[in-house]
Amino acid sequence: MHQAGEQYLTTGQFAKICGVTKHTLFHYDEIGILKPEVIKDNGYRYYSLRQFAIFDIISTLKDAGSSLKEIKSYLEHQDTKGFLQILTTKQKQLEKELQKIERMQRLLQSAIEVTSRALNTVYGEPRLEDCEEEFFIAVELSKEDSAQDRIYKINKQFLYCMENCLLDIFPSGYIISQKNVEESQYHEAKYFFCKLTKKYDSSWLYVKPKGKYAVLDHKGSYETISASYRKLKDFIARQNLKIAGNAYEYELLGYYAVRDPEDYVIEIAIEVQ
Image (cartoon, rainbow, N blue to C red):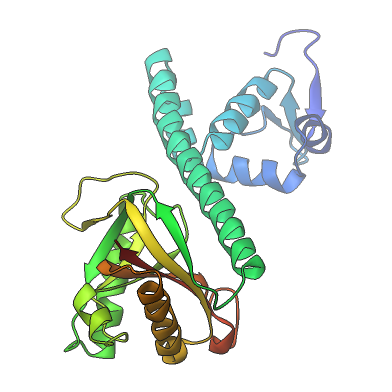
């Protein structure tokens, strides 16, 4: 027998208290995690107020990322250690999600800064900059690579960065070897890189040296970039400097942001001394 004075609620009343629809309660009943305490002969279903505690457990675990299957298993074998274990597991999962969100925030902020810089720079004007050391995850390319080979390599690099939580800053780009710059082979990239926020222990790690760089912001497609390289090399000569290292092409505006390749903005930086 039920205790005297115990209050029962219809499905609609209980759903209102819980802040859910009757359909949700029907579903919970169907899968066996929260059944009405009383079902009368006429089919009317009633919940007790104390069942709100069970609903609260379900909501808490669901908000923490538990599946209904996991919640059902816990309720069937409810104990303190089990509760602690499931919360600890979900806490770790939420920490990973939080880290993912934080990386995405950094990526978006970086994209905003890079895009703003691309829109506000003076195109085609060479300058000298003192640059700090930078770190890249770089995949080596070859002039023998087919288009399919190159896409495969870059995609493999992208997946590596994703798996190791490294993709959190713009821009990406290409590295042209000093030899190719000096021989005007500007379309033969040595590496494709993704920029890192800090040094990472990897066989793909590439370190851009700290030092002086001749820099120019090229507006246009990669097909027209040779003219910007010639202009930058003339500037280096007028400054009585010499090319001392590789060239770095930072894609400030690319296919993510513009439809027409002629609207690309690519920052070229050549190490000099």
